[in-house]
Length: 114
Length: 112
Image 1 (cartoon, each protein chain N blue to C red):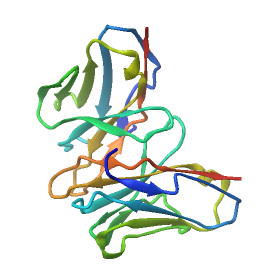
Image 2 (cartoon, each protein chain N blue to C red):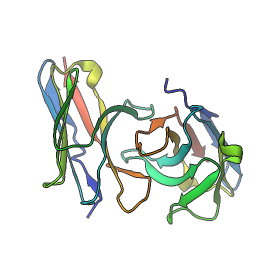
Image 3 (cartoon, chains in turn yellow, blue):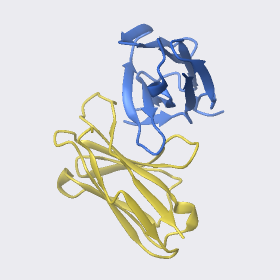
């Protein structure tokens, strides 16, 4: 257990519905990353935060995806109008900050869109 | 060209043997390199970090880095069935972006 938690662990939704995932980081970690991982692939970068500021969002990410990190604590990732292609594991990882790149992952949220 | 390349495997080794996992990367400015272990259905777990050319040892694991050749490897000595997992190579991005790029992973199978 890295100390990073994610909820829910599993989500099954129907196409067209909106879903929201939550990530609670290790308390002293100020950088937070969201990734998406499909079978046989490595984690694919979605977006990241330095404290409450969203510093980068993947160009591959459609406008249906949005993320927030109010007050630099927990973060949420929302997917609107879900599509079957959104089915994947959504991973959150946190970093202490400074010059460190060592990322510690939460357990992930597995999304299935039917 | 993929930014981080790994052989997808599976790599099969007998129990007690040395497993050798390889990774090449394209960003010459990368300075930080990581190996993650990922069991099926679980999230990645950081097992090794390496920043300088040469070898870094931690228990049964040795990471090797050659920046001139843009090559990083992971050796697992005395492989155990519990080492059976997918091993992900991750490389930091240069250019001021605080990100890493992951390879697709190599699946390792340790045969008892």
